[in-house]
Length: 389
Image 1 (cartoon, rainbow, N blue to C red):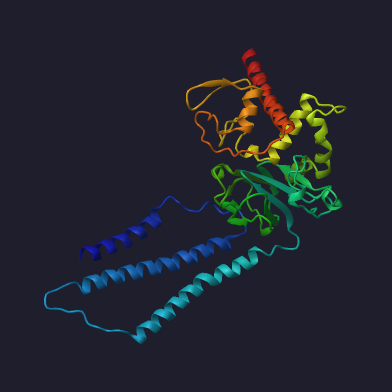
Image 2 (tube, rainbow, N blue to C red):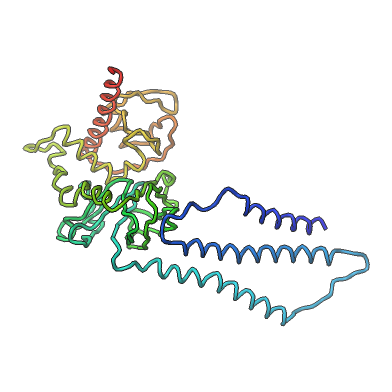
């Protein structure tokens, strides 16, 4: 009897919780109402089965409870009941699967007039690419990835020279215009997910996946990685800014083309200080910035003071850091080199042993140090200016 009462209470509490729960889907901001409808169908069908089965079990427990002088009847099979169960289950599975199959078929077939956006995932950051005036993306391959070319765009493909490169965690899109999203990963399995768009897709290393959607509301929406991709997974976030066509065109015009990024990035010889090549601090810092992007450093170390998996690089150089054992050290060139080459020897207080040992040449270490030093100098100058005021 107690078990039957418990089952009834569980059913009633579950239904009530569904209606009073504060955890509902984010407001829809794309054309994919079909996604919400499919989820509703699934919830209704599974909810009906949950209620009927549990109430039926509760009834059976009560109806056939133990009583003196009664014995359970032996019935090895019931063909009629089995047919009803098979038929009901089959109809339920069809009702669950069919809407999703129709919606998915439309989800992966973009309209012919859709704008193309490529999304590239890497632990733990996002990058984006738009076609240029030619309207076609250039080819890409992992063998072309360098500090100067973090997206691996084929430098010999003329179609890629005017591609718009956005290396950062924010991308802009026009309002009410279909967008075909091409997805690829540079390292492990990721998943590009914007909850208000009801749009997500796995990013599988070695292949390109795709889907499409149309943004229907202006605003800023958060990008999440929906596949566990390592210790910094929780910090792999970005933003999609949806705005009117004119504002989007103005933003896009400010972004560099692939050809321009290759021209602006100094040659490795210059960055390394090879004889006969200029090797100023600005040149090294520029090379360090490109390295930080291509090596994935910015996925853990922010440059704007935002908390992340590792210490922020803003104002880091020249600061005194405290380690987990209570000791301290001033952040200088020697400190940074030791932390880059042997990241687990000393742990900064408040951070775990998460940084992998990344193979770096002396020239690359020097360029990264120059970039961190530049961030430290900028922060110090800003603080000094504020104090003077």
